[in-house]
Image (cartoon, rainbow, N blue to C red; front, side):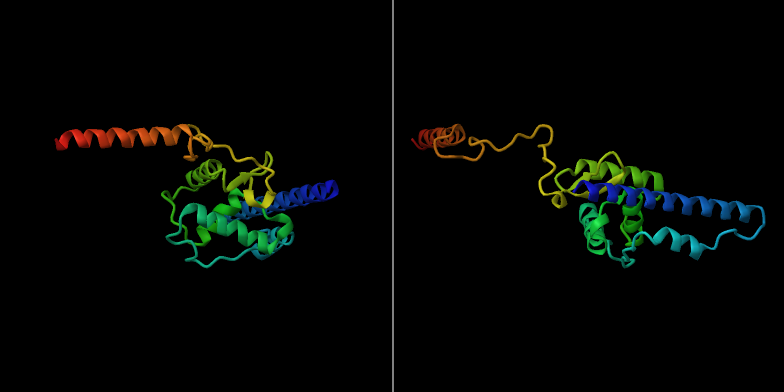
Length: 191
């Protein structure tokens, strides 16, 4: 099991390095363009090198139109899991790119704000999404077989027997006494 984790982390490092190399090559090409020179790296070669370690998941341009945020992200992550079971967690950038490609309608056009909003929304939806380690990678809680404990939100309490209206509980007694008072006050009004 530990060997698999080490291998997975090594693969993730390679993928990150390849993605960074692709960004650097695109930057070099942009600088060449500004200087009036031919690009040093072919775009197809950049994409091929960056994509060799992992297959890409394709989404229709209208796939996420009108869909709630959590449903769209869940679809992105489950599609990733189907395509590459050993590397299903996705970075915020990968999720954002998939949502934009699939036509998800954000409240803003600014990519920085979109990414910030995405991270905030994922962080707040802990029953469904989970940040993996200290990296910027996200997965579905259901993938981890209860490894993550879902905590109640602030102000929310776990369901105690009183809250479940168990016979004889204080909640049931309180409810029945309210009914008695209501019936008594109605009876007084009829006389």
